Image 1: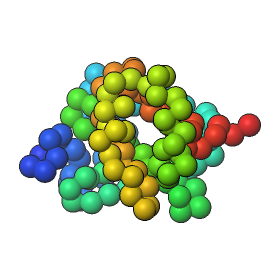
Image 2: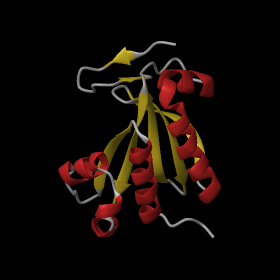
Image 3: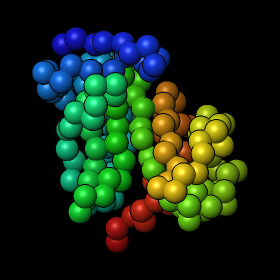
Image 4: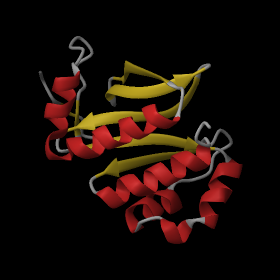
Length: 150
């Protein structure tokens, strides 16, 4: 397994398109933050009926584990050395709902949210998950994006 670093991205990701990582490769890359990775995936699998897929996103972002349904992506997770990042795209209505729960979100999440411009196709949040508080905030906002299935 080779990790390559991209100067425009300050985290080492799995960028080798010719090497499809296994679950063990991903967990090994994430290292001691693997428990957060596993918690996120367990939450999604327990509460949503999105299909989990491993895909090569691009040469700059590398491999991702994403959850899709009907060509719509709930979330994309990018394994990195010592952590992982998540791409979560929120529409304008969803972003407005996040404003209503600001006091329930941690400083790291709010910093990313506030610094990310709302575009016509959504607010593209790139969140690096390093702590349980980061994960808790992410899970709360995922539930704003898509309500838990009953």
